[in-house]
Image (cartoon, rainbow, N blue to C red; front, top):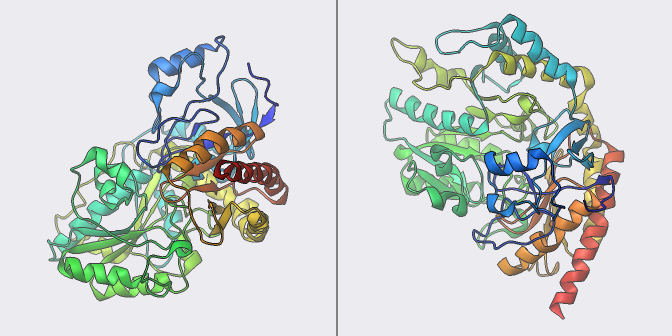
Length: 500
C-alpha cells in the first residue's frame, strides 16, 4: 500500500447531488464538461480486501465511472465515522468537509440518534402511510410544521430529496387542475441549478449534460439566469435578476406557468447567494400571476444556512418547501414536501386526493431518527453554533483571497464555494482542457494526499465547495485552511508554469 500519512484528505468529485467518489490522481477524459463523477483512484497493491472485489463485481455506484476501478485502483470504502471525521477500511482518517454530500449535519457517530430508530423497530418496524398513519410520522409532521415558516402546515413524506421535488411538481400540477387552471404545467427554474435526477425533476434541473442522456423527459422546464453576481450576464444587474422571472412568465403565458422552483442558495455552480430583495420580488411576481413558489431546500434546510429553513434566512414565504438530507442528518433516508394550508384546501373537498405516494415514505424508523435528530439540534444549540461561527468560517475562506487563483468566495452559513480563475483582474476562467488538468490532474490528488473531503466541480466555472458538519468551529476551520492554502498556492504555481 502507498505510504500515506494516517491523517489525510479525501478530495471529492460528484455530479449534481450524486455519489461522492475519490478522484485523487489520474485524469480521465471530460466528455460532459461537468465534473466527472469518478476519475481513477490512486493505484494500490494487488493485495486488496475482499470488499474491493465484491464492490467492483456487484456494487454499481451512483454517478461513477465504474470502468475506472480495477485490481490496481481501489474503491474508497468508508467504514466508520465520528464527529467531523471518517475512516476507511485501512484505518486512514479523513476530515469530512462536505458533511458527506451536505447531509450529516450533526456529525458522524451519534449512536443515540441511531438508537432511536432501533427502539422504534421494537414497537413497529414498518407500516405504510398509504391510508394509514403511525405515531412517529404524526409526531414528526407536527414538529416539522411547527418549525416551518408561515402556514406550511402540511407534510408529505418521501424517501429523499429527488422524490420531494418530484412530489412538488406533481402537487402543483394537480392543484392547478383542481382550481380550474389545467394548462398551468410549466416550471420556471434557474440555469445550472440542480433539482434531482428523476424525469420530472430533470425538467427543472438546468444542467444540460445531466439532461441530454435522458431526453425526452417531462416537458415544461423553463430557465432564467441564476444569481451568480460574480459573473452577471450582459444587461443584467443584481436588481434585475428577479425581473427575468417575470419576463419568462409573460413569454410562456401566465396561464401555462404552474410554479417557480429555486434554492435559497443555489448549489450547482458554486453557492450562488441571492441579491438583497431578490426573494421578496420573486414572491410578488408569483402572486401577480397565480404561480406557486417552491423553495427547494434539500440542502439549505436544517441549519445549513443557520436557520431551520433557508426561506427564514432570507425572509420570504414559499408555498412549498422540499427538504431531505439534514432532516435526519442522513442517519436514515427521509425527505419531505411541506406545503401550505391554501394548497391543501382543494384536496380536502369531496372525493379528491393527491394521487401520489411511495411505499417507504414516512417510514417509522426514519421518522423516529428524524425526531431524535431535531432533539439534538434543539438541546445542543446546533443552529446557534452555525450563527456564532459562520463569520469565522467566512474569514478563513476570505483569507485565501491573497492567492491569485482565488477569484471569488461566496455562500452562506456552512455552505460556501471558492471560484478559481486564471486571471483575477479580468475574471478569466479556465477552458475545458485547463479545467480538466487543474481539477482532475492536480487538485483532486493533492487534496486527497493532504487531507480534506471537499467537492471540486466545473458544472459552471471551476469551484471548490465546502460544507462541514454544523458542529464544526474555529479549530476545524484551521484544519481546512491547513490543506487549502498550500494546495491552492501550488496550483497557482503550476498554472503559471503552464502558461510560460
